[in-house]
Each structure stands twice: as structure tokens, then as C-alpha cells.
Length: 161
Ligand code: HEM
Figure 1 (tube, protein in one colour):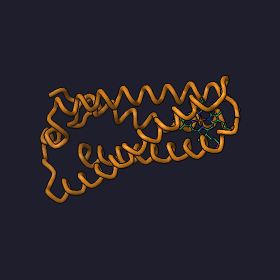
Figure 2: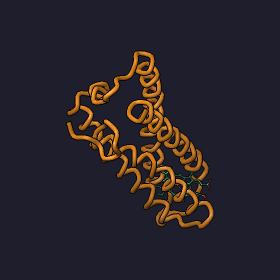
Figure 3: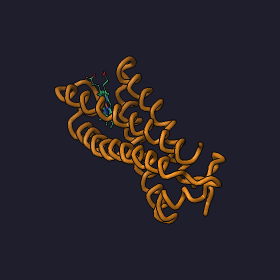
Figure 4: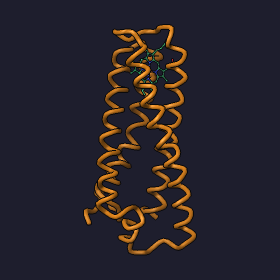
């Protein structure tokens, strides 16, 4: 089984996803800073579209990797000390919460991006669609941040301790 590079008993793609989860929030905040305080609308669009593509590719590779390794419970068997039933139950709950946020993020992100691409003028600038876009944008930001936090909590309890 291909090991991860962070030094824990996980897989290569799990470690790639953990790094992506850590990197994605500051990049997203920088993109919002660009649009809110610098009015760099074009760079905001480029960054948001790039983030969307990067996240989609990472999630697809991650899903393939998970299937190849027989699922997360099979990966957990690489641990030298196996989790107790209580720990396994806790980790499963964290994973469930993480999945709820992850699925919401995929839906919201797709809607925000397609809405932005279709309705916001070219080159991008404030328009009658700004209010809806801001609402969708902040909702996507919140769910992505919670996806990141819960993903890291899952990784910590499943592989680090
Ligand atoms: C999922 C991807 C995206 C997210 C999460 C996102 C997020 C946001 C957020 C939170 C704001 C509000 C900042 C504030 O409070 O002032 C904003 C503003 C803006 N975004 Fe996005 N955005 C995304 C994609 C896009 C795309 C693809 C475009 C262009 C086609 C775009 C163009 C704009 C513009 C022009 C504003 C300024 C609106 C105004 O101040 O009137 N965004 N975005």
C-alpha cells in the first residue's frame, strides 16, 4: 500500500488532500481580500476558477485512491496501534460531519461559479447580481472552511494520534 509523505500511516492522496485542505483557506481569503479591498475583480475570478478546478481534480484523484485502497477503514488497519471501538465511532462521526460540509461545498461552489460566470459582466465588476453573488460567495467560503477544519480533525484522530 502506497504510504503518505507526512509520516503517518495514511496514503499518498490522503496526504495530498490534507495539504490542499490547509492551503485552500488562505488562498480563498486572499481572493476575497483582492475583491473586497483591492477591487481586483479579474484576479478574484481567476483565483476562484483555479481553486475550483484544483479542488475538483484533487477530489477525483482522492476518490480513485480511496477505492484502490479499499476505503478509509482498510487504510486505518495500517496503524501499528488499532483504534478502539469508541475511537472508531468518534472518527466515523467526524467523517460524517465532514462529508456533509464537503457535499454542501461542492454544490455551493458549482452554483457560485456558474452564477458568476453567467451573470457577472466581462470584465468582472459590481453589477445587479452582486448581492446574490456575495451571499453565495460567503456561504461557499463558510462551508469550505468547515470542510477543511473537519477534514483535518478527521485526519488527526484517524492517523496522527
Ligand atoms: C466559488 C467561487 C467564488 C467565491 C467563493 C466567491 C466569493 C466572493 C465573495 C465572498 C465576495 C464578496 C466580498 C465582499 O464581501 O465584498 C465576492 C465578490 C465578487 N466576486 Fe466572487 N466568488 C467566486 C467566484 C467569482 C467569479 C467566477 C466571478 C466572476 C465571474 C466573481 C466576481 C466577483 C465580483 C465582481 C465581486 C464583487 C461584487 C461587488 O463588490 O459588487 N466571483 N466573491
